[in-house]
Length: 213
Image (cartoon, rainbow, N blue to C red):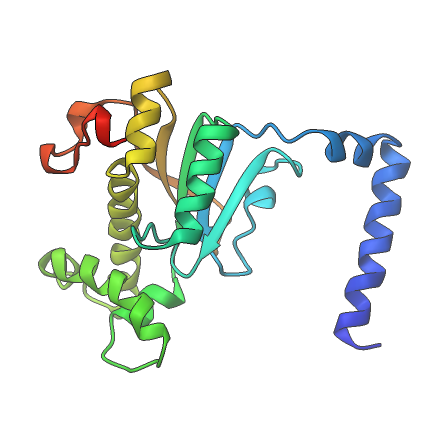
């Protein structure tokens, strides 16, 4: 049996198990989606949002990309963000990185990765901003993990610079923004920051007037 066929068999077994435990499980899922959380995480297959948080399908709206980036020109991310904030009205947005991130590791080097270079450039900008602090770390792995943390903090700041978040803060005083880092070695989340709705926390340069929202 090849790996692809195994996935289909596992899917059937999972479906049957869910129905045995709760015969209405899939019927409920099919008729509602009211998540309180938006998860912006890394595409790394070892960092699944639902398993890390012990939540069921339908509880977390998920967007993933390399190194959990909030890129202002990424229409995919912005579309997910707008839908989650304006239509699902999520109460919390979690930016979750993970220690030992391969994308962050790559951004610390001068290696060329082809098309990926354009994405890694965004992480390199974070490194450039905090290079003095990061370079104080003794080992390469420590530098990676320091940049992972600083990158999460920067992405949280980039979230609150969007007109989508600012509009929601003005209209409904939410959502909160949280920065997490997940440890692959023990499965524990390190909470770095929580940003509550506060327009004064946004640098004036990045604030939007009502007419521009």
